Image (cartoon, rainbow, N blue to C red; front, top):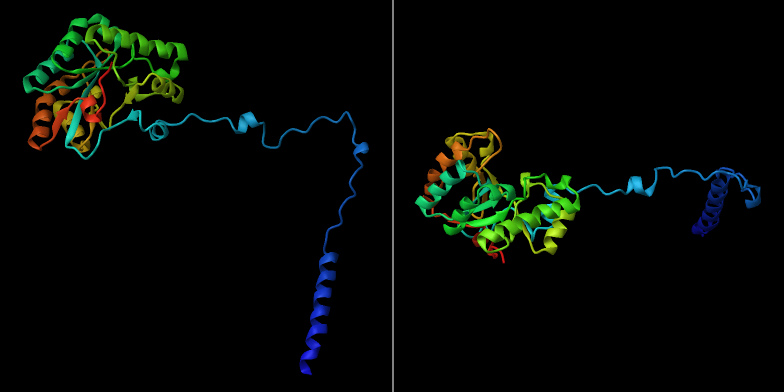
Length: 277
């Protein structure tokens, strides 16, 4: 019998709560009839701005681009083989490039040279020597432009014109391109992909363009190098740049890798891709 009071008390409590809930609701203003709004009222602006302002996509960073296009935007080869590739940018000139070629010939090493088109026009015999001695030629633009700053037409001309010059001397249109300064846009990557190009940057930077001495160049390379590395050096530079440190360091770099069981290969060997067509 004592349990009978629970049900009516519970019902009373629930009803009281319902009444309390309704009494706490804020009174709502009556809605206007649609006919009460003026036909001349201006359209309110969007609170956070237009779609174009808020959703305007920002360009991807180089790191983002490498992650998104990892099959054609490469920094290194497979870490499973004890191989590295020596690469030289901005060639040819008639001062540093021949000295680097002399060292490579003496040591029996094949490297990859990313050449600038207008410099190839100035020194075709040096590029012919590269080809004759078994080195690989890659595209480094026609005049070392910062490619993302160019129009589509100008960018494409940089690539096509340099490809044509390389083919006249080497007999092949190169598979590999290295954008000056390592800079490239997403739209340019897509166009290069449509032309079956592979973008090759690097994961070891000698920083030789800073005019470093031989010991500094070697330190920068050995501190970063690992199996599969693509190593950036320069075989020519801008006005006043001194690459003597690169020339002087090169024999020791080659000997050190060999003494540690690391094979020096070209970029197409490292990446297992054709040099061109």
